[in-house]
Image 1 (tube, helix red, strand yellow):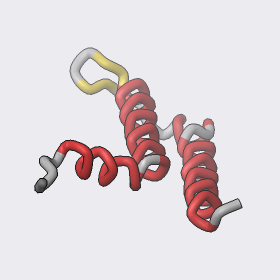
Image 2 (cartoon, one colour):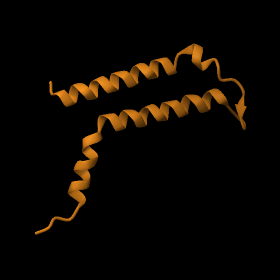
Image 3 (cartoon, one colour):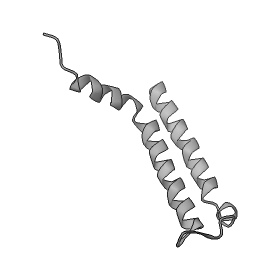
Length: 77
């Protein structure tokens, strides 16, 4: 297995462990009350979930962004 893939899998594993801790009951029970008409727990749940998705995307595709930028640049010929 290539080193880059090993590093990516390790980072995704760490992000998964952080997600397990973040979505554990004792931490979720801390959020009571409302933000406007929405319960704070829902805001925290979906906010952390979105953040974890964005972090996983950033970890999984760091090189593809530069590949797409290179393809879209005009070539000098």
